[in-house]
Length: 386
Image 1 (tube, helix red, strand yellow):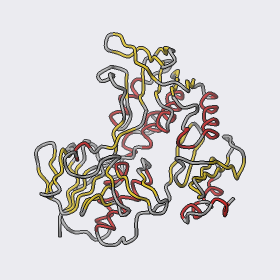
Image 2 (cartoon, one colour; image 1 turned 60 degrees about the horizontal axis):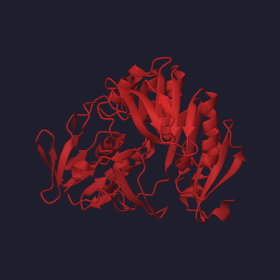
Image 3 (cartoon, helix red, strand yellow; image 1 turned 120 degrees about the horizontal axis):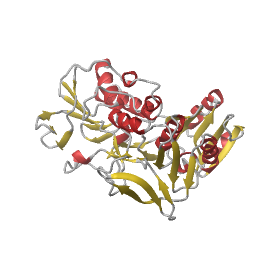
Image 4 (cartoon, one colour; image 1 turned 135 degrees about the vertical axis):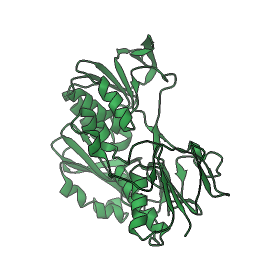
């Protein structure tokens, strides 16, 4: 049986390895991860772990991983020789390669080595950031996406003076639309967070090698003891340069999550064609990481014949509010509220793209939200469900 190499030890890599074993794969299996940690769950890093409510051990996804080699990033892949080269020089032969290397946070140019400037992706990042979140400290968060908003909640709860900077008019504008974003803006302001929308960052001011201010594109200067950069992420595909694989937006795959014969991608790094939505997707969602890893495991063991066509699901915890959504809300043309009103008290909103129901989002209305899952999965026409 040809050896399988899984590169990446996050949720997607773990799901792939567990799925292979569960589906009867008994051949050689090598699993490598760049971090020294055992696989762990990332969503709690910006919330429960950052606030100190959970100890880091609580996010661990497994207690041991006999097949896993930690602290060894992959640095190259040769599809002709069918090998992966690791940072220590070791060369791993493969018959099947699964790429599960995730993403890396975007950074602000010129901030490398500047004390007090943070990104958040790993457990180590969380520990470093948490050490700086002392009551009364002036925290500026650049970016009001999911990560920026969740960290704003945590930092405000720890007694920090929090300002969020966002070029769009409302938080999460691209993800959930202006109406829901406006509701979220009110929620943050009600919890003491200052929002500076409609402006980007021109530069960071510093003294003695440490950040001391954030200068916005409108000329405003914000005093800062600590800055979190939460402006999105980039797929971790640099190690695949020269391999011949298409890494134009993540590792580009077909509808079966295959990037080339015997080469698959799973999780945040995978850009695959979703036959149900008729478009290419790359999702940085925890649920998708697990589902895609299990699908590819079934594909490798010959137990998955159909394309990978999940209904995407995501959630975000902000203060005492949980947003939950099914489908693909990005690029929507219309939002229609079908239960309640857009407020923290609870509602369900539907999202139209073209002539189709693209997604549904709910707050405190999971039962009402869940009924739209089957319509999204079926590719329902907007006019048939409204």
